[in-house]
Image 1: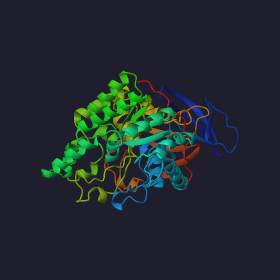
Image 2: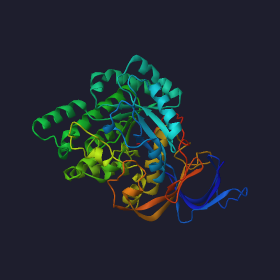
Image 3: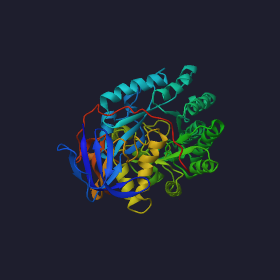
Length: 464
């Protein structure tokens, strides 16, 4: 059992910064105070003078698993082990996995299958988000049973033929989730607009990925977001709009928030830093994500949303592929390998590009990357907090360390980072997950299978 005292650090929460010592016994924080006395000889002391102590980061949106029927060329390059390593090296202790069902698999079946894999592979703690496809009465009936088993989320993709053909059933799913105090995560892009636009562009000889942004226009995101808000208003269900990319879609959400609708928005690092010009580069296919990169005006609007609170979380949508997969010459605007690897660098880049540049405070940094996530996903104050009784998920952070991102240092099995060569300031020195030191001296020192499948409660309302 861990017995650790963290001394002399500056504790940062979503509301304040202060200096104090933290005592960890086993998996929990048991005491916070000044000059805590050592209780026994075997208690380890860590001097955090000049460093920050942050709650472990929580990335609620990653892809680390796929059922066996998915072809090799489209499979993610990471699993729960390598994804955990990337997360912990970047100061993230908890991950939310988008779990795709096997053929004919029900939500409870997905939960059971994924749980077994997590128990063998994971080092970070994991929350499971079962994806709903091809809804049946049996699958709808299982939604409240998910909540009974501690799984308080479902994931819906609007950008499918299945959603278009069965939107009434998905409305029933969102209503069932609301009745069970669950959160519905929704990918908001309009399938019909994207299909028609892409087919027309290919017919005109514009199918190259350099034209990718035009194939999924902003209006496709706006229309789908409007539909999602309508479903929220119809049911009263809290919805969580994943990886929002555009000013137009954000305005739809902000108007809903002004009407006190429970509409929560997830930002994504790549949409805060890059624009559609990346697709014109020789290796522009590396930047293909769903939705696509947008304009500078969209980036500006998203930062304003982060600062003003209409964007509630930052998550990677980590969906890693190798360079060879991404640069396959057979790909076009309708045949995609979407997704990127950002898990290890999300927090350092946000600290360097936002906190140190005065765009957000350290408290806001913690709110966006830990506390708000814990509240929305039924984990607070077990996670996302530095309080007596909370899990000892803590990151000792050096806000002054400069480090250059290098492909060779990445734990993701993607084998590269699009940010290779960039220098950023502010990196984790030690990551502690439930009282165990899991990352230190730039090395993962914990074993696979020590991560847990998290039992969660209901969504907590956030103020807009």
